[in-house]
Length: 290
Image (tube, rainbow, N blue to C red):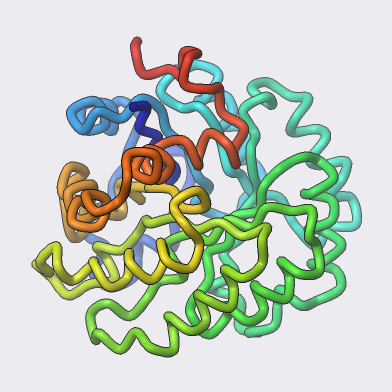
């Protein structure tokens, strides 16, 4: 079985600041992280390849990530950033795809969670940008909070030809256990056939030292709503290190994955990422062997 980590980051603080690392509780990861730092943990967990995801709304970061993917076989795809509301977005996406490592560009993401307007994803200029992402054959990763899920559902309906990938399951309130309204919003979002969800970023939404059982209700909601064929695993490394090791992130999913049939478990751990991000099939080299 091929295992794909569908969501992780790297950053070099000598190249650019990561302002979000100045927030409370971020001291443990306020340093540079490289693919060389990730590789031992990924290999120990049996991960064959990864998807590298943007961290800041800076256009220069995406070409840098594409260059990393072209140089390191661990990275099989990149989810980058460009200004979704730019009138020239189609050309900007074409330029990224034509540049060095452009074949690794699989998706675009924006930190919608930080937008003060809860209906940002309903804006006409955003819809136009999403149309351009779809026309370029890319996915769109959504990093949103639970109250923004209705707008995310609107966007998915407005651009039915675009695969919308929900990062971190929309950050459910695991620490409080008050999951009812989140679960209802997830089910409504998942009713759109062009939506996918990542089981990622959950350990940092839980209370410190939370047992594996704390993640079971969340994973069960996601798997029931989307089905395993539309769910993928992501570590959210190195952000996950605030709460758990790389191996512990995978272990947290074990109780639910163990209940799935083989084909469902294979989908969550690799096949869904291959399908939606356009990665090589299992009989081809996806980069984990070197």
